[in-house]
Length: 142
Image (cartoon, helix red, strand yellow):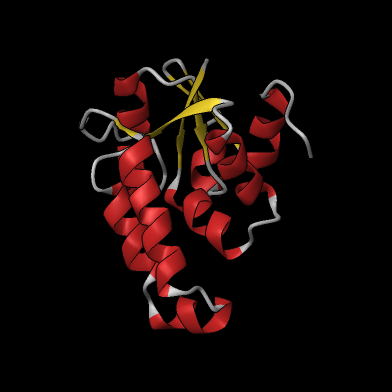
């Protein structure tokens, strides 16, 4: 089974655009096509972003949908071990994802962030966008 850590932007986008690649990522995860890892505190960040008035108004995300998604993340993801920031990303705010992904031993970090994608690989973790990752999954319908 493939193990992946998804960047916060992928999780938020999955709820805002359910038919896009990020929505397909979550659908694939729910079908058990891969095991989803998250960094410590990442679920809280997703919850906070989805609750922003600008997001709820623009995308019309209901409180029920937000809560159900956050509950699903709490119940069905594996929280990666906390790891120090390795200092390799040009955006220091994104470094924690690299450290946590490596500490968890995941094969992929899935992101839409150019600051992470430009790295391509950190230790044994390959950094890819959603479309690329979906293409790696067996029997993934697009």
